[in-house]
Each structure stands twice: as structure tokens, then as C-alpha cells.
View 1 (cartoon, helix red, strand yellow):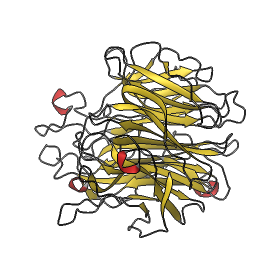
View 2: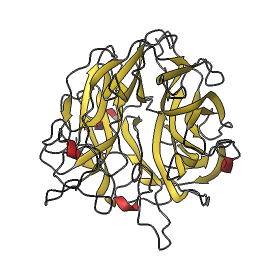
View 3: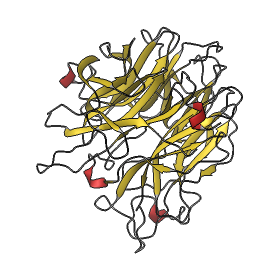
Length: 476
């Protein structure tokens, strides 16, 4: 069954996924048909304006809710977290900004970052989870804001506190037959002890009102969590990068009892990633089909020449370095993982670098699952003279690719946004930024995505990087 056929049916799909500030309809569309959701309204001189980055989305029928950073700082975090909601499948949008997060939004924190979003079907509530940061750049726990309609958001409140944390992911169990239906989980990397670096897990069973005490992973091989995959039977897997004994593994940590305990870290594969000048890491994104197969995608250069060249690992401009493909692995249990499959977006000899992924899945009865994958790519990452592009010469765009058979084969990849100069993007201490992660969801059977897209800064140097979203087309 193709995506076009699937779109003729209606599904409730969950993707990866405040006070009303203002209301807007579609303000303008770019040449690819994406529409602007929001724009940075702040003027805080300590932050960089007008910037919005890192959009994540969740869908519940025809309702779409997105969350993103607003007013990005050079170091950790942003002035606030924004949201945008559509109740008509993306035809019109309402947007606003959360309250009681940072000082600029009436809260106690210097900055806030890492928005993640989920819909808890059992309790009929949308939840945005995020990490507050102090003025030293330390993550200080987890904040959560709740909404029954995606339009009216509660004041953000702390559900976990720590002296030092970075990286987290949030998801809810919406499996009607799961014994843990209605559980919501947030996993974060806690370095507060200075020696024992662990993944800490907190659990809510009442729609985000109350949360358990943090549960630490049993070993000290944790890395940054970047996704949570929940099977229909309630088993869930925390997925992340830079784990393992040497800090170089894509890893998985299972729970089979609704978050009461965590199992030992499982190494999926050793990271092989060529870091671009852009802010990008080998983060994992995931999706689960109705049969319980876990799909995981991340950027990786092992299928390319020069991937193992140590001179190419960190922004070298002196040699022809590898570029990253996107690769897929699957598992039925979160322990045994399939051999990595290269997703054929471009030839292995191409100069294109692929980074920053969002993965979604659509099931329809006994038909094979349909995968939707959004990503960013640098079309000129390697230059003809044998050097890599730099911040001043790199180009970047958003892309989309789909599979109608659970990843066995793939449709032709598509460019879904204009091509930008990397220098148009907001700057951070890890490079210019669009996101650390993004989403791919299905809305009434159609693949849908959101992206931070930039135009040239104005004469004063003010950025112009708002959030865009829209349905994604696919080969039929």
C-alpha cells in the first residue's frame, strides 16, 4: 500500500512528541509548500534573535502540536519554548509560548532547551517536557507543561531536579493492550555526581501531574538519551549515543516492567560519524510498528570511503573526508539488533552529508508498515578540490524519504525546503544550528514534518530563522 492509498483512510498516530501568546494563520509559504508556524518575538540582548530551532511534533487524529526553542543562546538553551497547534490537519495554526520557564517568561531559569512532546491517550493530555539550564550551562532537571487541547498550557513545573544533566527524551505508552497504558517516561543523562554518569528515568502514571523519584541505570556506561521506543506490549527501550565502556556506542537500555527497573546497557554498534561544521551529532531516532518491531535511524559514515580517517573526525579542511549516510537497524526485543542497512538517499560517492533525523511509522492492518524519515542534508559537504565545506561555504536543506515496506526498499528522496547558506543559521558553541533532533509524524495518513528554515540576516545582523511545517509528498 502506498502513502497515497493510506492517506484515504484516517488514523490516530503518535509521533515523537503555556500560556496562549498570540494566534496566527499561515503567514506565508516558501516555494516548497511549507508554512511558517511562529516567529521569535523576544528582544533579550543576551540571546540571538529572531531565531527558532529544534521543532518536534505529535499528532492525534487531525490535531498537530509542535514545540521548539525560541531565542537561542550561543551556549546552552534559549529564552523560552514555543508551541504551535493545528486542529485541522495543518491548514491553520495557533501559536504561543510557555510560561514559568525562564526569567523572561516569569520563571526562575536562565535558559530552557531540549523540548520533547507527547500525547498521553489514556489521560487525554498533551505534554511538553524540557530541560532548564543555569547560567553556567548545567541542565538542572526536567520541566513539564500540560494541555488538554494543545492550546491552553499549564505553567511549567519541575518534575525532576539535579545539579547537572544534559540530554533527555520523553514518551508515553499509548498501547491500549499494554499493561502500562498511560505511563509516561522521561530519561535524562545525569552527571551531577561527577563520577557516576547514569541515565535517570522518571515515570508518571497520572498524565504528568506527579512523577516517580529518579531511577538510575544499573551500569555506568550511559550516554546521552535521544529517543524512547515503546512496544505494544509495554516493553520500552531508551536509545542514545556515546554510551558503552569507551563512550563510543549507540546503545539501548530496556525496561520490561513499566519503568520499575532498568536492564544493563546493550551496545548496538560503535559510532562511526564524520562531524560536519554544522551542529550535528549521531543521535538516534526511533519508531515502533503495531507488530512490535523497533526501527532506529541515525547518521553514520561506515559505508563511505575515508570514514576511518582520524583527520576527518572533527571538522578537518585538509583532506577529502567522509560524508554521512543515514542507516537503519531494527529489533524485536531491544537486545538483538539487525545489521545496519544504508538508506539509499544518494550514491556512496556523492558529496552530500546527511544529518539530524526524525522517524515515523504508519500501520494499516496487515499491510507492511510505512516509514517516513525527515532529515537535513549538506549537498556540498565535500568540495571538488578535495576539501570539506566550511561554515561560510556549506549549504543546507531539509529532505524526506519514505519506505512502503518497513525499510526493505525506499522511494526516491525529496528536497522539501529551499537551500540555505549555513552562515544564515543561529550560532552556538557547537556550530550553526537548526536542531539536535526533529520529527516525522503521520496526520490523517499523510507524512508531515517541521523544520527550522532561515533566510539571510538583515543589515543589522539580526537572524531570520523561524519554524515551518507541512505535509510531505512521496513517490507513488
